[in-house]
Image (cartoon, rainbow over all chains, first blue to last red; front, top):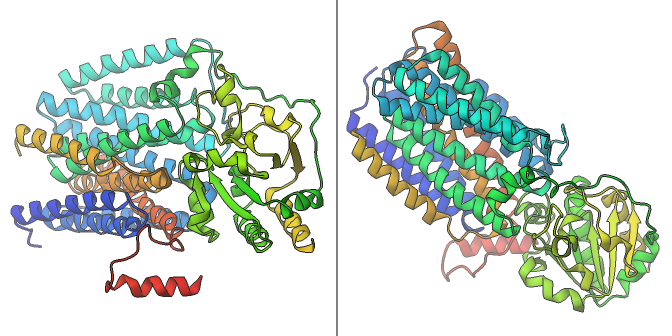
Length: 457
Length: 114
């Protein structure tokens, strides 16, 4: 097999890097996003084909087999996953990428003769391992394999400090001597650090941490590019590291949080202790027929969709209800909190899936002033994003998060499964207010009943 | 390639990375995160090189594991992002397409469907 000329190889890698830049650029706008993503995939294809024709490789059948296994597992999972489970899948894919980078670095260590190359090796090892283990924990939290609340135990900061200190020691020793055993130890310390980093993060902050770990994996890949002397890995990894950092900050800003506060807030203690106890304060609950009357004779209704709507797959019914109300002359809008669902932008995806027209989807900044002109705010499976505690209760885990001001509406109707607190684990005082009515049940079933009752009006 | 050239490229890539996502709307945060996630799956190239140069069986085994993981990141990442973006299909474009553009035709047909 003749190999490609090194200059041709370099040009093909350059083309792939340009495709990646175009991909990120395209993902900035809804109109070009899908094309951008396909351009990125094409760039990756070019790069992978190039590597087979530019480097002397043994074990090619085994490598092709491994690629087939990887695609054979990931593609069907990615195809079939429910839209609501998207965030944890993104976390999972990010984690395996970090793991791959760490393994590549580990195997390259014996060939790393310069000290500065070994610096890149230990960086990739450590950051890749943190990203792998951290992503595994975020996956477990989002999949509800473990509690979504912050996990803090006494001595956590001390253990974290000890792990980091040991990691710095092991890393220095590997850079100086290149010991494989110490590199393995470093890998384990990185895994421990990843778990400890993410355990104290709770509730709605988890997606921001996924974005942060995404940026970490990017940096690990860039460093592995330095180790292998591969410019494409350097460029692609750096791009993801930089854009991921910006994205993490943008997401945190959308929730009124600082990244440091998200990661280390729980260490300060006390501030994140949410209550899981179900309150026995009296609430006003109601029947689907009553809710239908309320909605059917309103001039203006604002629907506030949340994760509960998403899990119940109720977005289509919500869209139908909006149509039915509009045909009665009611003006209906959907108020979308930036982090409604489980990730920023998640709810827009779900409602777009249900063909809710783009003009009816209002972002928080746009709709907040309009709640006071609304006759009814219909909160479907959302809780934290409308909780006034974000503005009034300084110790609350969601304090500082911008919220949808549904309390300003004349009537508030909550469709909820139970009185169990939301994702952030705190109670919502709004549910006990006199203008609030609760309709208990699965979001989709409740919406279907309300829809039927509206049609019968 | 020498260290200074690599450093130059790295620094420039940082600026490009900051620049391309500086003004993204929150609507697209999730797809952008997922798309960036797919891109770092390109570590597959590194995993292939390491596997192709492995001589010890255990080195080969670990390298092949890295290939499997990197492929899952790369392929799964792009597929999942595409599925998310597919959901934006029914939306009207932010601005009307320029007159005479070929996109006009597809816009009409999607609108007819709605």
